Length: 119
Image (tube, rainbow, N blue to C red; front, side, top):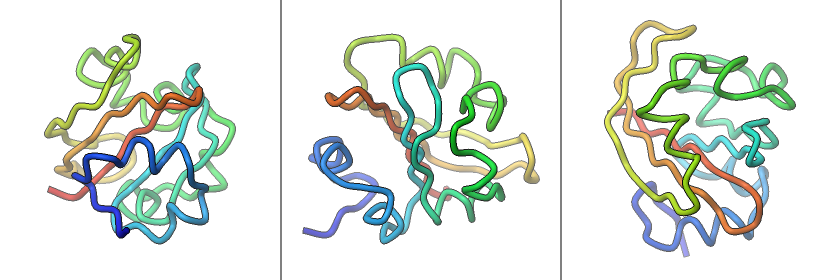
């Protein structure tokens, strides 16, 4: 089954697949551990954010990669036990202000995901 940004079972699909699979998606995927350290970063996210995969892996997403997301609207939402929410947002860190749609997901396997789609 092809996955889209809005697919209802996407959280389960993300938990069961790898960065190689994420690279086939047409929207951005940042996979983090529950501390916020980036463990996977797909090609679409790299293109949207203008940041290479090599630059982000192993770094804390909210403070070292995209500090523009270190706020109540994004980072703080991951504090809860359950999360699957879509919000409009504007990236402002390295690129020119870029309107995006974010889908914030807390997986069941010890990982959390930030998905990005151009708005």
